[in-house]
Length: 78
Image (tube, rainbow, N blue to C red; front, side, top):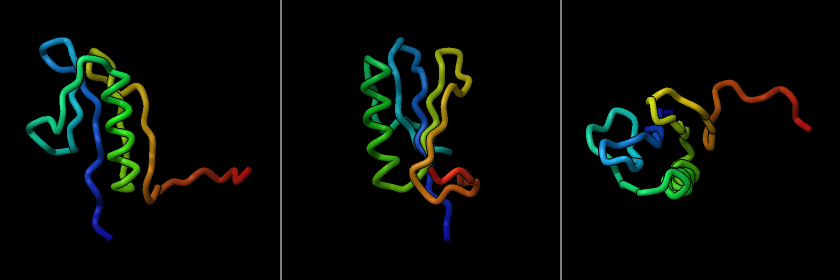
């Protein structure tokens, strides 16, 4: 199975937020609000069964969500 590109919500130079695929040089979409970018990226990741990485303003990753074939699924099945 080929690895599907993950989605990243990253800050842009204009003070807004971009959504881009991993290894892409350009953003898929740009948003003024982080919440709008996260909502859009979540939908794309769910449809594509891929990973979602949400970055902070400094570029570090604050959150990771998996909507696909997680290589390390949780063991707790509650």
